[in-house]
Amino acid sequence: MTDEGWQAVSSEVEEGDRRRSRRPLHEEAAERLRDMIVGGELSAGERITEQSLCDRMGLSRTPLREAIKTLTSEGLIVLQPNRGATVASLSLDDIEDTFRVIGALEALAGELACANAGDDDVAEIRVLHYQMALHRTRGERLDYFNLNQRIHEKIVELSGNSVLVETHRRLGGRIRRHRFAANLAPERWDEAIREHAEMLEALDTRNGERLAEILRRHLDNKRAAAENATATERRDRVD
Image (cartoon, rainbow, N blue to C red):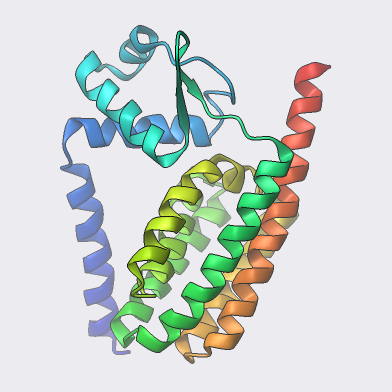
């Protein structure tokens, strides 16, 4: 791709970032609350106290309640009778089962994406990959993770299968926090970067079978790391 082409793709990504910054207040609230849960500021099983969050986030109750509804639909928050909203907590078996299904979904998405992706689609993912890698060198874990998820979501979108996209979105919310925790160890973080570089190469050459294999392995490695991180966190909490 020419320098002009790269600049055009990079400008599209930056424009997308600007559009996100102009989103309605409840969408911004949802993103901030999502980051608090994923980043561990709100722990699994912790009760969501509206007034406390409103004070911390400088919001009124209306956008916060809309944000809570959004994150409930994503599986990050659970609404329980007589308890209100709490941060979702999954058993280790639930985490394992969900990762395995997500891995199968993303493997299928990778095959379909290679058949559907145009040069501009690959270029967009390439720009996201380089931006993500830059956040890794800076140790900016949450910024890295958000771009990481955008890459995975873009591959799923390129499948062109609406049922796959919706199922992935619904299940992905349940383990979003655990996907983040999977890269807390530096060696796993570096391994994930290498796996993403392999994904980009397979997508660039439109090798659907290889991309499917890489995604399946990537999610399996992430599952093992997430289970270990979750088990360690729960042991530390008990101790």
